Image (cartoon, rainbow, N blue to C red):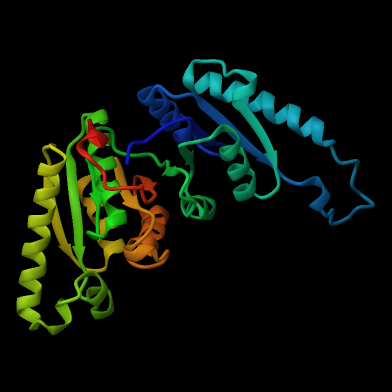
Length: 292
C-alpha cells in the first residue's frame, strides 16, 4: 500500500505533541496537505451534577472559537507554520464519530492520533491508514509484521517504504504461534504434521517467505521469526529492537475482522512501545512501485 494524503491529525488539547509532530513530518514527506481535527463534546448531552450551582454553559460557538484559537497556537508552535483556517476542523460528538466525519470531509488517506480505543475503532475503516503516535526511538528500526495472508502484504510494502523514507533499518517479522486453531487457518496442512517437524517446517518456511518478500520489494533488511502469540511477540520484538515504528495490517486471512492480524493489530496498537501504523487491505497485490 502506498500512503496518500491528506493527513488528518486528531488532537486532544491535553495530548502530548507526538501526534502533531509525526503527522507534520508525514505530510511533508508525502507532499500532502495537513488538516487538524478537534472534537468538542455535544453540549446537548452534557448533564450538570448540581444545576442549581452551575453557571450558564458556554455556547457552541464560544467553545468552537476557543478550540480553534488553541489549535492554531499549538500547530504554529510545534510545526513553525500557521495553519490555514480551513485546515482546522472542529467537530462535535463522540471522538470516533467526529474524527471520522472530519476524515471523510477532507478525504484523508492517513489519520494520526494518540493511542486509545478511538484509534482501534478508526483502523477498522478501509478508507484510510491509522498512525498511532507515541514517543519512539529516533533512528530505530521499522518492523513490518505479517501472517502471510493477502491483507498482510500491504503492511510489508508500507514498512519497506517507511524504512526508506526514514533511512531506518528494516525488519520483516513473523510469529510462529503454536495455537492449533490459528495454525489450522494460517497453515492448513500443519495439523497433520508431527510436532517437531511442524516446528522446524514452519520456522524454515517463514524465513524463506520473509526473505522472498525483501527481494520482491527490492529492499535490504533482516528477517525475524519468533515463537509465541503474535501480538505479544510483535510488541516484545519492537521493545527489544528499539523500533521507531511497527506496521501491521488491519484485517486477517479471508477478511474476517478479528482473525489473526485483525485482532493482533488491535493489541499491537494498544500495547506497542512505539508508534504503530495500521494499514487496510489494498485492492490488488502490492507492487514494487508501492515502495519506490
